[in-house]
Length: 125
Image (cartoon, rainbow, N blue to C red; front, side):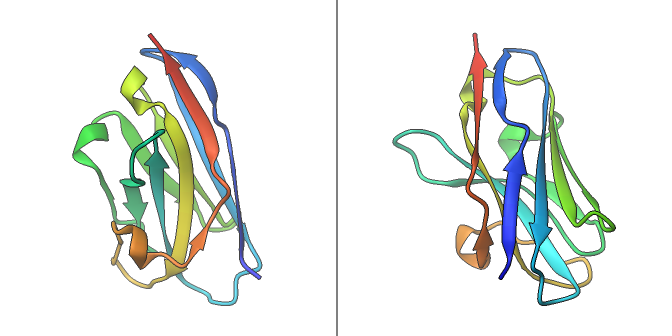
């Protein structure tokens, strides 16, 4: 059974940085794409960043230039480095996984099959 465990959330002041990690286990397939999403209270879950099996990546416009997604194949872990954080970045952050090969990444909530439990990120002004 696939499990995704996010860590690294917390409370940070505006302008600060955090790095989220998402460790995968129980994989039944050899290649996969991953994504990061977030959900603020009263809002829908939204796309943040995605990375393909080959390492190609994309970010939402709202985080471009501030957030970077990367992966460690050996550790089966994906990271989200968040810099220059703003109060509007406050949300529960989720990682997600699906089968994927090559340079294909995915930005839609419905495109992912497996989800982590989420980690809270709070940015104070």
